[in-house]
Amino acid sequence: MTPKQYALLIILGLLSLVLVTTLIQKNRIRIRYSILWVAISLFFLTIPLFVNFYTAFGELIGIINPISLFFFGATIGLFLLSLQFTLALSVAFNQRKATVQQTALLEERIEKLEKLLASKQ
Amino acid sequence: MANSNSDADTKGHLVIIPAYNEAQNIGEVLTELQKYGYDVVVVDDNSDDNTAKIVEQHGATLLSHCSNMGYGVALQTGYHYAIQKRYDYVVQMDGDGQHSPEFVKLLFDTLEEKQVDLVIGNRHTMVGSYKVPKHRRAGQKLFSSLLRIFSGLKIEDPTSGFQALRRNVLKFYVSDLFPDDFPDANILLLCHRMGFKVVEIPVVMHESSGVSMHRGFWRPIFYVTLVIFSILVGLFTKLPKREDEN
Image 1 (cartoon, one colour):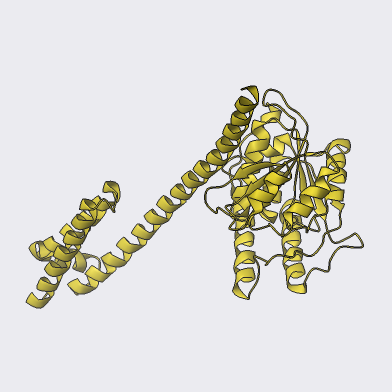
Image 2 (image 1 turned 90 degrees about the vertical axis):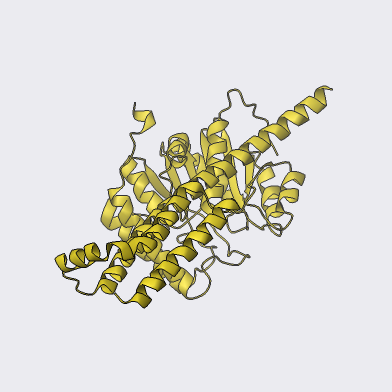
């Protein structure tokens, strides 16, 4: 990897770390999801430290160019991340559905009880 | 409207109407239903118009969703209500005037007299029904064929939302297995796999006056694909044990 590529990775890592930290500070992102992004940012920052390891690993699985290894890893990572978010989205929808249904049923019961109380007073 | 049942121990008939922006038609449907004296619950799926107000004016029970969740979720809210209030028999129908209230009694009667669990109103055999557009009819025939191949069920109108259900089916429908995204032919396959007895009877249906959710070119293709996929998933879904078999 060239010094320019190192610099690009470090800048990318720093930018995403700042972005995630800001989002956490503003309470715009849940801690459980933010940890993942902090880890990804730190991964970007530490790539230059372990270049030899990544090069050796790349050669082991038949990827000569470290940049190709980076893109290969990123593709798999993004796929897994999308799957995780689809799961989280499905769970969130089911929870929202249950809340909306319960609210509608409770609202109807409260209205009935209020009418009953009013008729007794 | 005869919403006279107390919460304690009620058994009887309930009509569930999921509604979204049905202010134009829901009043007429409720007026028609009043003639038969059934309990009616309308699930307003966060309408922008005054659907809720009209429902209240007609004295029907109103369940209001605080956000728009779609047809399937609205239906399921109605099922939850029916279970909570201990209704034995339920008819679900649309609030847009497509389903004729005069056939509600026939659906209930068939459910009780034929000792079946699910009755589907078939719009294709009775004279007087509207003519279904060719592309929609093709979709219905495709679902019907898939059902026949995978379950042996001979249902001519598997997409009909005009149905009568017994309490044991309701208990299944309030579970997580209910496909609230598109409760269509796929749910019939699950019902068959659960061992519920399903029959079809002819009813008259009118053309919906509202805007179809299947309008455009891609929407119907997407919908048909989803339902086919859902039918295939339904073949392998792990089903719970029926409560009435315990």
